[in-house]
Length: 202
Image 1: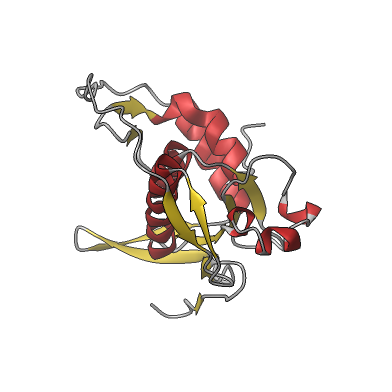
Image 2: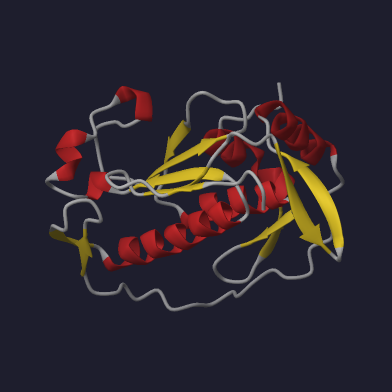
């Protein structure tokens, strides 16, 4: 696709696509559809979602599932290679989040993923207020930048559902599917979308 460049940075673990292009073309059912990626356009998209009719939900998802906690897992820092032990559930969440962000990248969105807060060594280097980092329990730091933006919007979240919701919104879906197969209306999650993307319905 002409004009699209990939930028995989070392240091901050980044999955990014250049925000220079305002419009990208997407092949859909044999037709070429233009998708505008400016912040104003995405704000309009969020407002349109809020005005949309809640779709009929046909899948409530699984009601019973295994709640046994997995064993602690060694987390290896992508930046420095140091290994540290993390909760098994957290490790699984991080893997799910990484997959969601990789999918956003493949869809053509300029997104970043920073896991340095989990590293005892690298966490000392992330005291950067511009990245929205704060004290407390380590969290995944997600960044997104729309076409025409000078800087990334950052949000901290270890909840895989937040990333699934954002990915569904960016793709133009009206529903999202949770980890247990439950399908929910996306418009009900507008606050998650605002937090994670910096978009606003105002």
